[in-house]
Image (cartoon, rainbow, N blue to C red; front, side, top):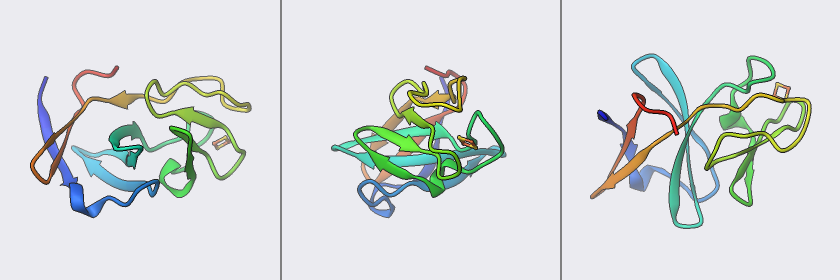
Length: 105
Ligand code: FES
């Protein structure tokens, strides 16, 4: 599994998604409850950035139609989205947030 630096840990604010591009892949980074999650930044329902949505209870909500995706699994728990969004492994090293795009979990 290859990890690449996505951003600095100090750049993340609690429950405020940050959109980054890693090797051309849009990824939303979310720090919540003392953990950092990386989720693909495009809603599985339509071409909308999840980073513009709200974070609550380890879920990110798509602002357009309200589907909520679990940050741990990428699974939606509210329609209209029915397909999961990829999530990516995260490692923290010092102030570096590292993400692996090579193995989705
Ligand atoms: S675009 Fe995300 S729920 Fe419709």
